[in-house]
Length: 89
Image (cartoon, rainbow, N blue to C red; front, top):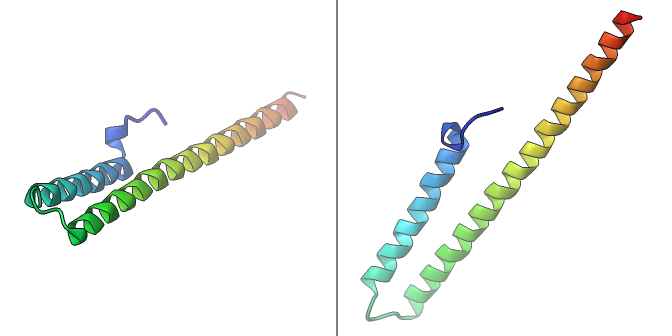
């Protein structure tokens, strides 16, 4: 469980996706620097909202996964301690 974040395939996929949204957003803003019409505004707003949902979803998913794995680890260690104490008696 002592892995670095860059060793996780999910984290790298998240970074690539997040970087992709940032590049798309920068490209749209750069292309429409003087003529920021309704269409450009709606696309930029959509990119921002979707990027935010992806970030929040990833963070909440990782938090839930961490909580689940911690619960399982605790449960397994408690079961092993109980078995060892029964074997000693």
